[in-house]
Length: 582
Image 1 (cartoon, rainbow, N blue to C red):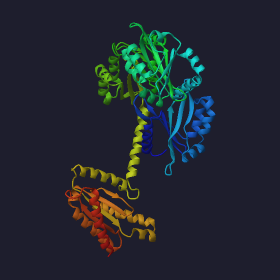
Image 2 (cartoon, helix red, strand yellow; image 1 turned 120 degrees about the vertical axis):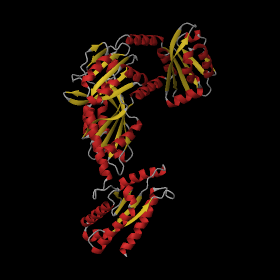
Image 3 (cartoon, helix red, strand yellow; image 1 turned 45 degrees about the vertical axis):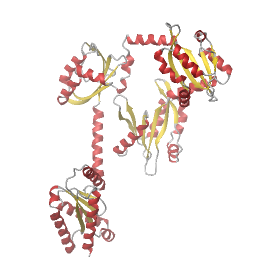
Image 4 (cartoon, rainbow, N blue to C red; image 1 turned 30 degrees about the vertical axis):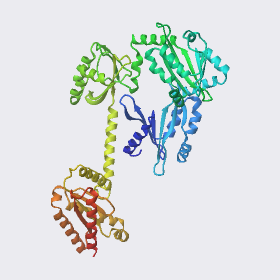
């Protein structure tokens, strides 16, 4: 596809939008790359690439998109229509459902960056919006139920123990209750200031540890602001019934259709909370395979479930691939066993670091501070060093460790190839194709580095030599550009031969710059005289390039910028050019 460095930069900027997946698509060739966020290493990683984005989207949609949404999705994802909307600035987001674990999950695909006059690519982002859609659907259902007073009454009897209907302007309220609980608690059935009354009752009836959480719901200004952002607000809390008995309740707050009233709905969830607590206790007593399943997404070759208190462990193998370590299916001391295996399996240059990382003391100390651990080592498998990733995370019970080993040798090789390709691309971007010396881009970077040293007061002496070819346009017009190119290369060879220890840059069609330092700086006047002498001989013989030149040196007492030196050298070059033409 395009320059990898450019892709990475664009994708990194696009991911500021925090999308689940991002597609970079070449609008001309249809080639694409798909990026996602690796939750374990918190880094950007390319997951997939292909030759035809639109063909692959049509193919994958048939098996991945919810059947009811496939037709509409494919209609909107036609290339001509999609690109036309992008160029006209009319593209809207596409909402559809993906089948995940057999269930439809809402996603949204939207344009992050479209096609401009100078670009032939576009970037699309995918976001999981299922939770927001479910909230919207639920809010819509509740809104329909509140259309009439009869619907509210039926909803009250069916769903809630108590509903407070509150006028947001006057704060007056009316209570609709289907239980006697609040009458026992002596809570008024109606009043003139719901928020003031609720604050008073909260201090009297709500568990003190929950009052801070509940207080924003009974502050009129705060609650109104919250409802403007999200249509429904909800929280759980505990009610102290008789100084001994505690019941659990859920408070849900929503705006009515007229936006002038709010319904504060209270539901007794004591039974629900008791069941939930019992379930958590049951899960804590047994090994939960869900803790292990959450780590399988990275396709580990081996997973170890380790008790951080006793060191006992069990091994799980999600695949039939070879394993980096030959540990038993279970054992009494994971850290001792893994250290013994690494002594003979880890590549010699990585062995010391690997053994230090997996020592029980240092490993657990690291895990106490950080949520995860990640290390990469070379294991000798079949006499060949292979990169293996070791990652660890705490299980939900905060006692057990889930440690996975994965073969990432192909990934490391791809990354190395990409880095080599980037270096090659950078070198090409910094070199002049015709002469082989560095180009204008390289000079600008070199100048920026010199300017930084000037700004820091730590700049070594240097001078700038500007060289400009005479009559290049005439040669191109009369003898052709091929002869002109040879004239340019001949002039470049002369500059490089005289200023042999100085970096030379071609900054224009007929303009070169040499930056003299060190020995060339000390002998600068002699080198300039030698250069001009050779130009004079070429002028007299008519057989070589005629190159005007000017030299200026950095004066730390009056120069604050590299451009100050450049401009003086440029002025001196033009004086020499006039002399050569006279």
